Amino acid sequence: MVAESKRDALIHYEFRFADGRSWQHEVSLSVGAEQWPARALPDWTGLAFHQCGHCPLSPGQAPHCPFAVALVEPVEMLSRHTSYEEVEVIVHWRGREIRQHTTLQRGLGSLLGALGATSGCPHTRMMKAMAWFHLPFSTSDETLYRALGTYLLGQFLRAKRGQSSDWSLEGLRATYRNLRQVNLGMSRRLRAAAEEDSSLNGLILLDLLAADTLYALDQYEGELDLFFQEYFDDEDR
Image (cartoon, rainbow, N blue to C red; front, side, top):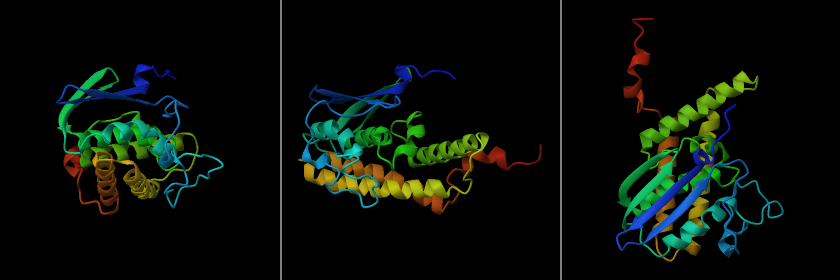
């Protein structure tokens, strides 16, 4: 088994603003890593504060919502800006540098996807495998491809271990339904915290991707067929 390198377990985001200021944030994928700021946490991170209705945690287990804690520093920065502000986002990940000139909302949506998957929220933990192959600024088709591929590979690996496998994708559909509820719950929290609309709108963008993926899973209409034409040709088999 190849040990993970520290570099490959760290996603580095940098937001550069038009006035010359910049803000940086890192997402750690290391086992046991926590995204907890080393200081007092705001009230809106409390587990009971607009707790998601399907949350399996109790205040005795976790006094703070793991996902909310992961968002403390991004929310503080984003509350000073508007969602439509133009920024250059630079992502350093697995020895690569990915740049995109976009809106703060779009850049935030990409960062939140990685933060949610690594936060420790029970309903986002199945996204951790996707986070290891994080694709910044992914489109709905790319997200669907990665979600399907990750889940099916996970089922294959379970089968190799002699565990039960879900080839019907019911578990993946359930995961995305839960994710939608988590995103709605986090939006309620952020309404109480945000001074501007940027952090909230970033969650809305992330929820739209989750909704797109869930719709494609429930009502698949051939969105990915174009990329798999060779799989449908049996002439040489």
